Image (cartoon, rainbow, N blue to C red; front, side):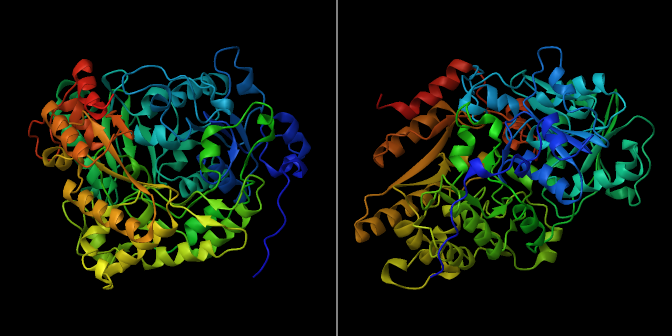
Length: 597
């Protein structure tokens, strides 16, 4: 067996291994000016799990000089925003890997005392809504330099949306920030096209035909080459007056975001019309995503943070590997499909092996891969049997209310990848830390106890997972026990969790393994009553659980659950839905989890 390469010593890496974050580092590279400056609400971690690093490295690979301005001080005289100077092409802005308000506040709207994306977990290094704050500062300092906003905060707020923390509808962040362009979703392809376009024409208007880009048109909208494909929403002002308009808009937006091909989305506001161009077409091969993960990341925080303490978000993922992007689960409270897409973009096994080989050399790696996963651990390599049918599909989920007949949920490729990773030099154990979708396993597990082979390799996958991939606890997410609530969540019946638990417990007994199956649950979700929570308490107590992995529902922008929370309506039927908004009664629902306390 081939021996792993010697470990990497971070102290011996030249500062040029990271992208520059100061004028001095730019000068050491011989730069007088950066082509592009990326401003981020997160500390700079040069790792493929951090969006700022991904976008910056992608632009670097395209031949551009890219500098990063992480967590600038917005409170003083703005000297941080001046220290890198004026970029030749544009400023790019990301609030960070999380929506800033989710990062800052609890479901009860209480200020959090820490920030996982800052050294030592310190809070206070970014403002609320950095996308808006940073853009306004840069537009005042450099009014003639284009500003492009992106990342999860801008992506989920690209059109009129409900803001839970201010309890009101807000227009697109293009309107509120004054940015020139907005990139939504995974931004590697549009950001390079923006840079190439601005290279030839410095006016941001030249970028308005680029896919996956949104902008504000203050003149009359030009007709689309295929005008009947344009999706015209109710105006922002109409939504302010009538919640039904907002509900109807969301159904259009979500349907479009789950299609392989769709037209532009147009929404009028007093400041102009927000135009959201279609996304890039889905490409089932792995070349594009491989290129992103194969970029020359150091997999380390920038040395400037050396004496400031660990960055908790990095510590959590430093020994994990992402296998794919996207999720076809369609859960109503989740933003993944709206940002990464419904269709799965899977890496090649060769790309995954290359990254593991690099990880083995890192000083913090002790032989244990903490995760080989993605948004849902067991969707790697899965797609429709007939992609032409997928191209016509408008459904938000391939799993709810039942597994789509056109979906191929075969776990063989994923199981083979697990085994391949486990056999690599320097790897002692491979654990699966991402939540798995047991609803893709349970329907195929019958007869597995008697040794019968299962369709789609479901039993083989589950057995290997239990015997090799569990570090003590396996996480799954039934989210609730009651059918009316699960229907609003787009989750499968609780009986599937009970079936999976029986299989899990029985296999653990056969193998002599003291492992636990840990379920996640949500309280106060739209459609959930106090009676539903009491029934949840009874059922989970009967199963022997003292629940810990629970949360109070938090409405986040651009999810079905949030729109129901705000409007009180199902956007697809416009039928009323019960929503618990009173904070004390929401807390009462949450307390049902903790009967044992």
